[in-house]
Image (cartoon, rainbow, N blue to C red; front, side, top):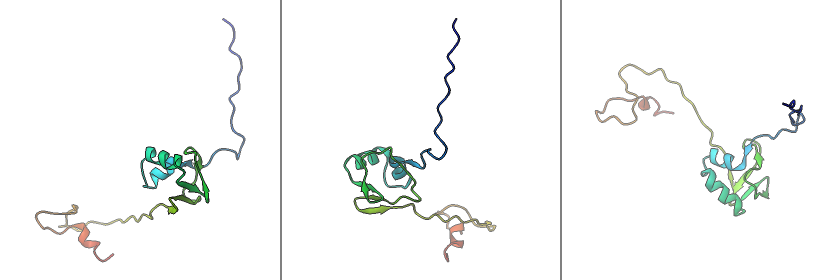
Amino acid sequence: MSPRPNIARQRPAPGTQSRGVSLCRALSKLGLCSRKQAELLVAEGRVRVAGKIVRNGSMRVDPGRDRIEVDGRRVAAERKVYLMLNKPRGLVTTRDDPQDRGTVYDCLAGL
């Protein structure tokens, strides 16, 4: 049995690693469409990144920094708001209660 050749693994040089995610994944995560639909949009030339038409769905983008447009409209993540509530006794946590009891959503009515 001959010894295995010593092949060093190639690693990218520091600072040259791709940032972000693929364009199709970004469009999907931003809630615009599925990845398959994103591939079609890109192939049809309907997607721009930083003002330039992109035809490569695997192009790396940073959705938080890059300006992504589909059919001339900017695609951006919706701002999410998270609330924490110490549920008062007697309220239920359902959105719609058929027994007409008070729900935690009643506490949020003034927000």
